[in-house]
Image 1 (spheres, rainbow, N blue to C red):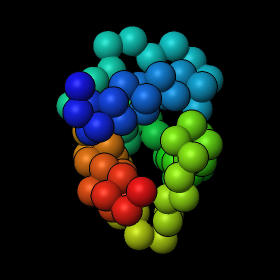
Image 2 (spheres, rainbow, N blue to C red):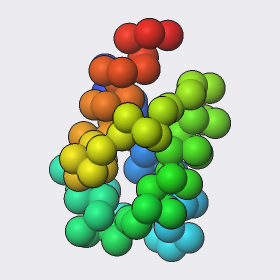
Image 3 (cartoon, rainbow, N blue to C red):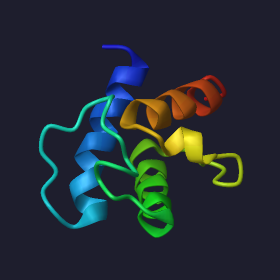
Length: 86
């Protein structure tokens, strides 16, 4: 499993925690904003949970709306910008 695949799995595990409801069938192609109704507050919560889980610091200032398009795009952002530095 690549680190991006692992990140997708981790994000999918965190979605029910952040959204406070069951999230079934989420995968890399799941639209965070449109399909799941993620907003700026829950998006920030997701990033904070991800930071805690991974032990990394994610600069929310650098995250754009496109990075939150899908579970996969968020995982790719983290893999490209953070795991490369770790």
